[in-house]
Amino acid sequence: MVVLHYTEMKPVENALDKMCNPKAKVSAHYCITEGGEVIQLVPEEKRAWHAGVSYWRGHRDVNSASIGIELDHPGHAGGYREFADAQFEALVPLLNRMVKQHDIPRANVVGHSDVAPGRKIDPGELFPWDRLAEYGLCLPRPEKISPNDPFDNDASFYLALERFGYDITNGHDAVEAFQRRWRPENIDGEIDGEVRAILFQLLLDRDQGRTR
Ligand SMILES: [Zn+2]
Image 1 (cartoon, rainbow, N blue to C red):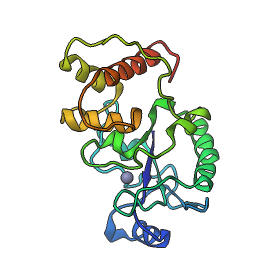
Image 2: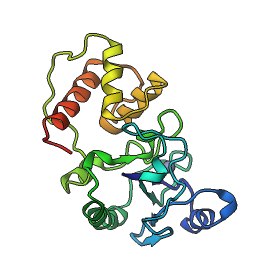
Image 3: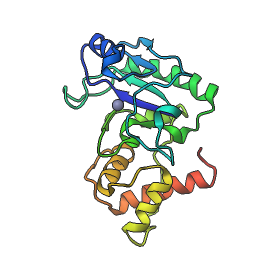
Image 4: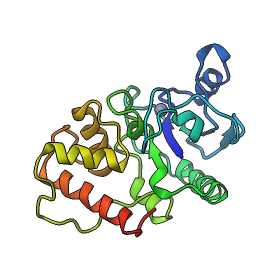
């Protein structure tokens, strides 16, 4: 897996100091500055401490199964804003090389918020997942979704959400995390028709082998 984060700390030197301080107990394999500089902090084959308590597709120890990339950014706490173009342009070749080298499925390139619903919201709704999907480096948002409600009730929706990968221990948090990634225009934690239809299409595409 690859987990994308923001540092929520400016300037970037402070974030790097923290990630290099053993007492802080946080680290990541890479940090990409807003200017587009890629700084490796931990070798890819080593475990870094970036995901914390987390879950994705049955795995509870995401740190042992993932590469963590921190994006230098002020975060929601520091004035949430668009991600820098130079940073995105540096991320693309890094991610491209890594998914090929480690054979990482697109469905396993995720945000911290996807693996820690209710606890983390980075990199957040302004991260350009759509642009990353154009490079084939993460799943795209489903283009056409069925207007019919594919699930009878909330229980069947949650089962499907867990099957897609999310920890559904807290249903509201799980729905918010799903929305942040797949329908960032409206993040309210409520299960509505559009959210149901998006999830159904994502599962359908994956199970039919159109995405991986
Ligand atoms: Zn994070």
